[in-house]
Image 1 (cartoon, rainbow, N blue to C red):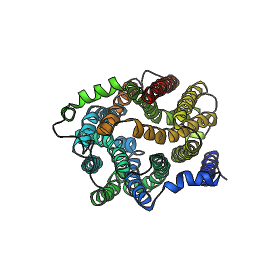
Image 2 (cartoon, rainbow, N blue to C red; image 1 turned 60 degrees about the vertical axis):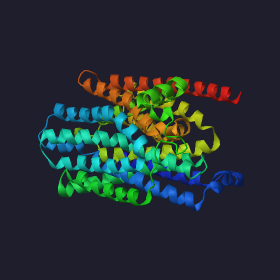
Image 3 (cartoon, rainbow, N blue to C red; image 1 turned 120 degrees about the vertical axis):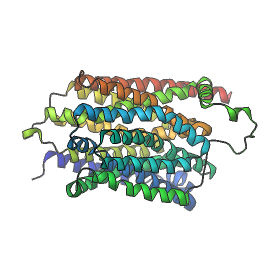
Image 4 (cartoon, helix red, strand yellow; image 1 turned 90 degrees about the vertical axis):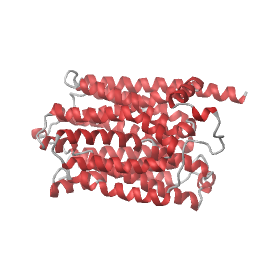
Amino acid sequence: MLDSYTIIFAACGALTVALYYATQVPKTSSDASSLDSKRTPEFDTFQRTWLGVYLLAMFSDWLQGPYAYALHSSLGFTSSQIAILSLVGFGSSMIFGTFVGSISDSIGRKKMSLVFVLLYTLAALTKLSSAYSILCIGRVLSGMATSLLISVLEAWMVCAHNKRKFPAELISDTFSKATAGNGLCAVFAGLVADQLCAYWGFAAPFVFACVPLVILGVIVHLYWDENTGVDSNTPENDPTARKSIIQQLLEIFQTTPHILALGLAQSLFEGAMYTFVFLWSPTLSDVTTLPGKDLPYGRIFATFMVMISFGSYLFGYIVRNFDILIIPFIIHALAGFSMVLASWLAHTNEFIVLAFFLLFEMTCGMFWPTYGTLRSAHIQEAQRATVSTIFRIPLNLFVVVLLFQTDKLSSQTMFIICGCAHFGSLLCYSLFYFKSQQAKSAKTD
């Protein structure tokens, strides 16, 4: 007999498949010609190549996520020692992220994509050691690699897309497919990781994660051309080319303050999202009616990833029919309400709480392609990777501060904080929206 969690997983999967096929059928012939006619065989090849690299990177990342705590616990480390390892990773990403982003913009995104492969491979291999110092070094390398993962792959794609003069409207299609594929990769990675651990132990997923990393490294080396944030038409003696990264960023935020508002909106959302990763399993465990609190965490996680795919397909539908600038208002409002209501109802029924968790995961699926498209349109090419990594500084700080308070704050309180962060995102995005509209009107005048 099927249990409730299996039925929920199947229902979410069916809804996602139905939405996928619904979004593949244009409403009218004019809809088909408006977007599909802009696709060319060259663009399709470009998109498939980049998506292959991106999804291999995310598959490797997802392989390493589910069993990190179990591996460290099996080595005899205490919960506080494991928490410190997590803090080292977030701290590394926060400190080194700015530098690796600026280096990517200056020396090339292809080169730094290969550096990402090297760093993440070395980080994965440190899991073969039981020495705490080696594991800390691995977390430092992992934090640096994560900063590159979220910046250089996207920066390379947007720059290459524009250099090839593909239609700007197709960037949102690429981000939507990347988000949907990422959700499916997460489900598949969880299943693969389960089997690897069953046969070879908790370190096996980390070692196996090196395989997709090597494959994507080969693809990048063979098929990617180099691009940087430096305009080839800019004279070498141009004084703007010699500005420090701090000077460039201050100039960006002074001349276009709406970009800072966009970055804060993104950081608050992602900070609350990463905090949610630490909250959902103990929260459901506290309210479950299952004997022994034996929750099927694998199926719940897989359901979350399916809802991320659902959200990405929903984004694809909305962006075809409405202005993309409206979507973040929906995302941040729903995310905030889902966290606040999950807190208020945390001790009622596990399936009510799960429903709000699924709603939140849907907003995550809408968030990634929406903000990817907004970044591609509003961030200057010269500082694309740098600004993207700087956006992560507040989110890493947010997560680090909350992780230090996990022993002092209840899960309900942390959910309220996450909800407030999402409403803060809504406020910041509102500021971005109105400032960008004013700038657009002034430019038109």
